[in-house]
Length: 170
Image 1 (cartoon, rainbow, N blue to C red):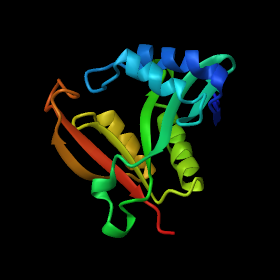
Image 2: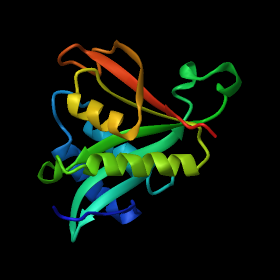
Image 3: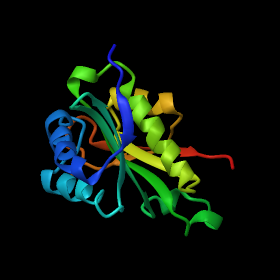
Image 4: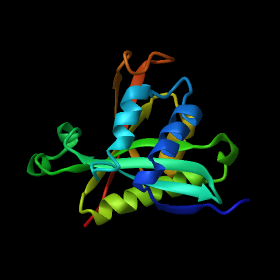
């Protein structure tokens, strides 16, 4: 097994990150509109979005993007509804590196970074039937908290989104 070097993404990584997400990420379960992906990843340059990347020599092998948001306030207890939550946005591993635990390592690093930023809850979502993502999320400690119909974003299979969360006991 090859050792990957994990590090925070840099502005100069943005073109490679967009390429990795759009070439290695598409499958029946993922929602990856190219313009939205490019806009999202470009926010790494402004600090609105962060990412952890994995490299082997000069080859990008994986990325997990994350940010703080208010998007999941509906799942928050009343006394925390106004606080920011962490959100893991994109998680993509190059096909050549799948099955080596890299996705879980990247996801754990992103969760740890969000915890360091002071958020108490971290959310992630996926297609209800995406077994690979479900396993990676469970491995890192995410629990399923909701599943709902979202056919515009999930046109395949059940058409449902599953939301998962980690809550830190600080």
